[in-house]
Length: 291
Image (cartoon, one colour):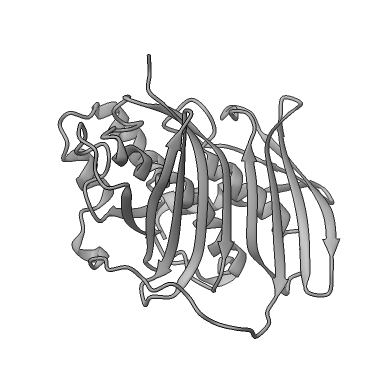
């Protein structure tokens, strides 16, 4: 396991300060606010720690309310909304400086047999044949070297590989609003830390990294690394369909059906390498052209 992954796992290991209250820290981000995927992942950890052990996360719905301050701790308060015979529902509010910055609802379910079908996995090349994030970013001389290093540092716990040229690499002309990324953690998860919730939490963390790329592609924008747009996540929803491992290759197939009114919508599916549909994701974000 890489040191970066150990650091990320430490970040996600919240401190319990009351029965249903937890405290988390932050890490530096590319932008001067807390990375949205971190807040969502930590909130899911808080919710999961109050749910029965035999119930696994199957969905989350979240709103980003205010920018988080990376220099201050975040307090997560959990409301035990419902414990039914099959489902458990939790609501989490993340607070900084006395104000809510994030709100999450999560649902957990006991395992049961049922009807089974899924959308087929799209074609994608073997992830081992694709450039690493470092090779991609350092291969573009037009990018500011300081931004490149910040991006790499922010993503160093994850091996993330674009199938095609990312927005920051080739921009200026619109492309199909579709992007594919393979990802897995930089190291195996085993022993005491190898729990189903952790794999779901890590996928939640990664899911906020690239989902709005397809919005940028549709308009020929390079994105945050180039500075030709400004934006932030507004809301985020995920459905966890089947078990998966975050330390094995996952295909993140993303597209944007719409952008309007300073907002862009991204939707995606996450597949295991053997073709099982593991997760569905939808996010809307602010995407504005600087004046």
